[in-house]
Image 1 (cartoon, rainbow, N blue to C red):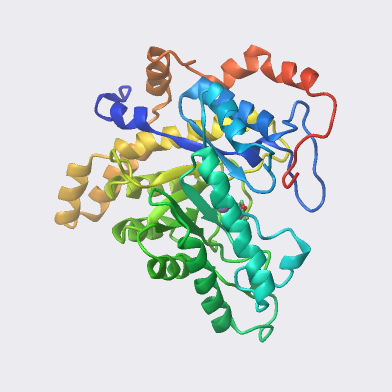
Image 2 (cartoon, rainbow, N blue to C red):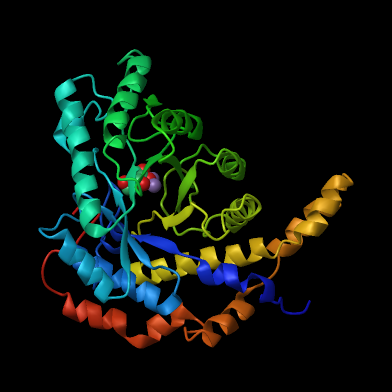
Length: 390
Ligand code: PSV
Ligand code: MN
Ligand code: MN
């Protein structure tokens, strides 16, 4: 087979932007152990600097998402200037109503108005931060739910979430969006208040045009056809963003494309078909990952490159041929068109294209050979490293 030509797809590839999560650059682990890695960022400023390194080597990651209060600083305008000085922008602000004692029985769904007030105020504070950082997306993932049947009224909790979200939504600036993420279980095990795309969709539709859904690829039951959900949310105009990662079992937060590259391809094919890669598309692409045992910067490099690779393969699908085969009910022919694109090794062509644009042909190797990791390990030898939640 001859090497694939990227000619028709390079404009789309050149536009590709994948937001990096600040928390990917801190130490993280499981409830069993957090293993440190030498050179890990100690502060929000260092996490942003590491994200900027990923962008510098790939041109793929121009923005960094913040998590509040993990990335709390005294001066967010200064943090923005710091980011911009390094060639990146601050992106989505993620709220956090899942780690404080007060949220034991929920946050925006809590039955106590005082707890709901605290949770709503936290989101209003996030909006203030967004004004300073220039961020347009407020992303909300709620840990709210119950562990036992009968523990609380699922119906009343849904109503309380709707009321709480409406109060937050009312304070959005015209260019800002409220992005509601869903997750089928964990930390709640019996029911979760926003467990699926349908619930997120119902809630965001009730709010208005500036509310959209975030699809985290790791937040579905095993066997779920995630690309179907992608298609549906695109069709309904409510797919706001992706949190990319991959999973073998639950919310593993492993490197996107590591567990199931074919699923990533199928998802990105639906994005292409649904116009999600078109210029001006409202769909944003983020990573939501943690690197528990591997170095963070190479982990993020591998991740954005995996997304780029599968995007290229998805864009190479011969959609005319696919349409013809589908119209003729040529079951195997249609499947073959899709599989042809999936089986195409785009790596040499992408490497060539990267080099032509002034990036290293192999960013992971370039990083390893640069000595930057060793430099960071020496420079950041002292002090507390930032962790998941630090
Ligand atoms: C928790 O499951 C989670 O991974 C959600 O996916 C959020 O996006 C992320 O944490 C950050 O709050
Ligand atoms: Mn997520
Ligand atoms: Mn998650």
